[in-house]
Length: 510
Image (cartoon, rainbow, N blue to C red; front, top):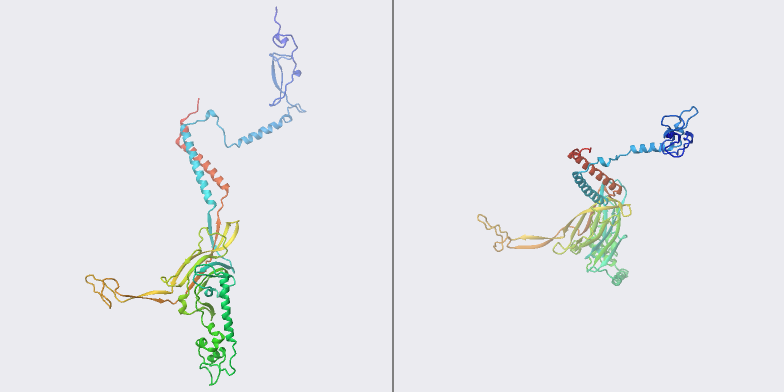
């Protein structure tokens, strides 16, 4: 028997079937460029074969040429091109696992790098936290003009009567304010520091009112019709009368005599009450006084003070009228509760700020009974930015030094000087018993210095101003520094590995 030709059946065994033609093969489209599959014969003949062969099937144009632009999958090519372009921008090329080399030394260096990075990050965070609230000062020339300055004060004089407390202010420009009372409040105090009650003040006011009525009655008392007052030797001719205090003063002026003494003793002046006005008021005792409030003056150098006697202006000079023998009774002891030059915004805790708040000065017989207290204040115009609600706050800071000069000082007169008992030295003795001490006889007594008891605040304005700001560092700065620390640390670790030559010891596998 003869074997049938397998090409006649299109395969091995089975029923005979005709060989498929090229037109009868249908291939589904793939993701790759379009292809079609046909039948290929083993000998390349036409009509049939023993397997399949692949053939390009493209779109042809009018001239029969293949047109690739008309493929139905052109958008996929664009996507692949853009993807390849993005891939070229990759700054972190990957290395296959088979080509990676790991070593114990590399792991140790990595751990050290992690430790260094953590320490540096923590240090940077601490530095950033410290910089956030740091106060920064900037100095510049103060060019402001025609500004006024407000001084707030609260001062207690525990042994000075309110009737003897007068606040005067003056500056180098010649402006002066005498006995400032419109913006200040005086509170009378007991010697123990407690405030006088309203009832006590009312009783004393009634007593003073009664004295004033008696004085007015004496002044309005009718004189006899034939009354002829004495001119106390200043009459021009015998028989001239001086019935009023003004007539007595005019008579003395015509004679060019001083009238100060006669005014205190003349009966006419005493009757009219002018003798008391001419004589300085004596100090009151038994009370203290609290002075609180504020005052305004030009921002130029000057002083304000509470001193003995009432201040007056004479011939362009500021003088105080008082009795020198009464100076010992002006007790200048004081306690400064508050003193500020400019608005107070509660910034006492700001670096560089000082004040006189809480200063207490008490005088006793041992340190002179009373004296002259001087505070030399240097005022610095200051602007605060970033404090509170972020507003710009303008005020003044100040620094001070102080000085005290007692009214009474001790003077020791030595009646005996022992020059020594060493060999070769002679001792001179002037009275008193001979002794081996430094002084055999001494005499102590106090001498009153020539000064005006009181409390003086002498201030000076600096020509420079200071701007105080709170430094604020954004959180983004911290992030940038942390990224720089981490990146720099591992870059240095990588360079260290290269210097150690760890990578050269390992060869590529295979």
